[in-house]
Image (cartoon, rainbow, N blue to C red):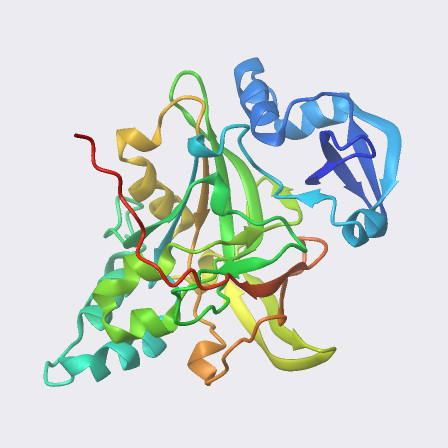
Amino acid sequence: MRLVQLLDAQDQQRVALVAGDRLRLCQSSANVAELATRAYTEGIDLSTLIDSLVTDDSLSYDEAIAQRRLLPPVSHRDPAHQWVTGTGLTHLGSASARDKMHAAQGNHHADETDTMRLFRWGVEGGKPPDGGVSVQPEWFYKGDGDCVAPPEHPLASPAFALDGGEEAELVGLYAIAPDGVVVRIGFAIGNEFADHVMERQNYLYLAHSKLRPCSFGPELLVGDAPESIEGSVAIRRGGETVWSATFLTGAANMAYELHSLEHHHFKYSSFRRPGDVHCHFFGTATLSFAAGVRAEPGDVFEVSAPGFGKPLRNPLAVESDPDRTTAVHPCR
């Protein structure tokens, strides 16, 4: 089952079931996260609940895309209660590009960079044979729900940014139930988007480089993620393809099991606050930046994968330069 969220003809947020080229609207005014929590509370599957709520009222999927009515497939009514986070160095082969960046910053004299050391720990301890707790991965914070751009809408790179590059990834989507249980709603394909030039200056700038917008969807795949996913990512410029590649994700292509990455995020009690929503990016090994490509304003990032429905598309925009220091008002 695949779901979307969108604005209907009355500009009301709705949940819809993907049915070929039509979007069948659900009768409930609740969003996907709220429905997932309701399903958990009632002891039923989300798909069962959706089946009971879906109507014969439908919209053209292509028209919803053209009119830019699609929303992120999981959201919170209060963006401050939506966490957007991620893990890096999780995929087999994901360390090479970053290791080259970090070694160039003066670490080449060491036998092993911090990047390669953390990556090796994941390869050696990311999938314990006894199914126990794995070594913890790299973790980062991206922002709250306000940093999530809807499909077809721009990813706005800040005026102070040095770069804005795509990161095609698998995204896990979760709601925290009233009793604090983490409810996995499902998965989507996303574009994590980051400032790779800033990160290349010094790997300790990783946290800064990740505080950027992102996007995922347009569809939510309810249930488990495929073990192996072979997706496509491209940059389009003026109707031409500037760069394209295949990206591999899913547990079969990672140094970690997905449940291990989930554990190392949700082991912190602050991430199990009832009512919150979590969107967690699982990392990638494929970057246009590593191929020497630099996106330009107006370029369109496109990410797709079999089983996840329509492609995710977002144009690149750059915010105007305020050319000023952010003012802080002192209390006296």
